[in-house]
View 1 (cartoon, rainbow, N blue to C red):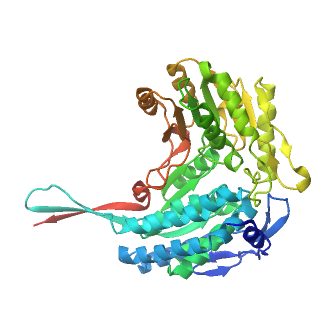
View 2: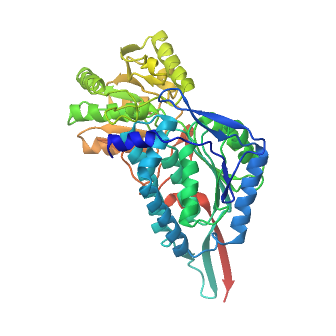
View 3: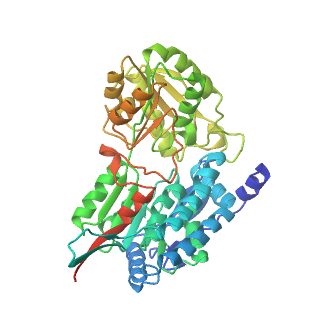
Length: 494
């Protein structure tokens, strides 16, 4: 990946995009559109269709017809595998195009976007393609005159509602296992980052996915997302996003057909550093990346740094040194280490959290301000607060921006109490040279993922999901198939 190649892709015009339904492009029935504003410079990039309930009905009907037809749902697993492998190859072949398109849409720095979006998505489709013909049914341990078989069958129509921070990566976590299991899928991309998933639909058709098996309906969550949530012919919804929307989806499921709802919601993840940490400089550098990559717009971001008192001052000094080296700038410039905030609205929310933290008495050590305003884009300096008390908003509420809260602790028991002292339980990390302490902390911290002497970097082989108000259900790994299939027992008298 070279700067000249990136610049060529940046210069490509992006035509207005329509809905992808039943294998074809179609405008919203109302002809309504939404402007796409690039966070790089605040300019209008293109437009997308603004779907209404009738458009959602069309997409769900197409998915249901495709599922019932059986061309995909009853295809031999090896056949689905071939199509998904072709799709993975096409994503890789168009990786730079997809990465740059996504950065223009949501502002993630290109170095991260290239790996985390198209390359990660290609790997996810390839992994589930390879897994689908290796998932077996069961034979029950019955009496000799009975045969008990347990079949795994696709659910039917799955709706995937995807967030704006990593739409291809997170979208693939849901779309790939749902398709591999034999379902038909309706995707509702985020209104602020829909372009790559629309392009993915084109590539899926090119790979040989039958018409209607993958549909993409763009528009507002409060309209198109709600219509999917209330739809009587959607069998499951897989959602990554805010807790408030997750609660609404549960309500919609209760008010409609009791569809399955799988939720990956917010986090306020603790990054816990003990005074026996082996390498302060490395731990500080990884911790800075764990909160500031993609401008903090990462669901598992280590947004609470809990540091044992004996190493607090040295660690904070190393952290500030690592933070100072991070360059905020044009996300399509390879020299930029951090890109843009996704929208003007998100930037305003981030700055409001900064003001609230200062008002409550936290000590701002660096950052807290908007950068590069003259560009027209939405940029924010990496921000570090110390002396953050557990009752402060900054310790309890997810910012989803480049804002770190530091709290000192004295004992392991206090660290556990602080780590578990939020409503969330998505991710965590523990830095220690004591193997026994590491295992104790893994057990004690209530989180779906607990890193030890690192932060981030888990791959498709292990599940991702949270405890408590971080949601339920799991993306990634073979466990994802549980969310997109049903078990059917055959009880046969011999």
